[in-house]
Image (tube, rainbow, N blue to C red; front, top):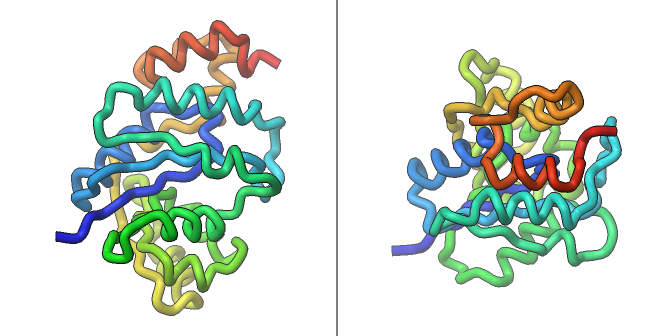
Length: 200
């Protein structure tokens, strides 16, 4: 039986329980042998806030997934110079895998809508399947319309619990001094506090 690998890329600034719930739901639903979290090194699209240092984001992912036997974190984008493009990451991962391994790119449905603006979307669509994580009530028509101009794209919808949590909201909660309990894994909450992240 061919193996299946899930890849979850993102800024993870910070990683939160919504990311973990989506990854676990994808692992169970699509029978993934493992899920690799790939924190972005230099996000190619300008963010509306200063992105936390890559090493800190990597450490938070490592702490968040530490107890899960099927989750791992990769330094692939952190150790590669220049902007982090999904197509380069998928290409590198593909080269490391058995040709029979099915590769699933796990990301939010909104990110799939932006895929046409990414570098080499046609190559990306041919290299892997996509798991589009949606929120309840999501307008699937927008997704189908966007994918219509990317023939051959294999997209699977996944309605995962807890994905309404957002990193943006977590950062705002830190500024306000609000509790992060049950929103962010406890080791990550401690890391944020110990390093004074998101206070400025």
